Image (cartoon, rainbow, N blue to C red):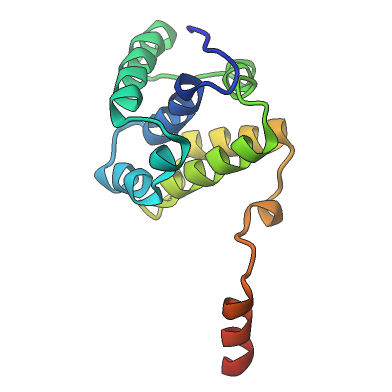
Length: 146
């Protein structure tokens, strides 16, 4: 599998692309979730870069096919890809985007679960660390409603 520079646009895109493909196909709702998140714009990454990296990922994944038409990445390879992002705020941003992608179709496939669990383990985040920070306005509304 090709290597990308640490914290590069390509390393980020590969993880987002892997999230899109980790359930075995490219689902329109997952791609739309990525677009709706605006994470690419926030990070200054073009969709052209995403598409180019996704093509490269697909080419690389063909090398890992098990002969039965299935692609399986082991934990060590996933960890290697995750290690290309080492800035904590960037890790959190990417992980939140990955969660949005895999959750978009309302079903967490085995491959998605493995990818997310490896990211949380490698980057040392738990579920609570990934939750949005409540704003004062949101907290005030919840108090009024109770």
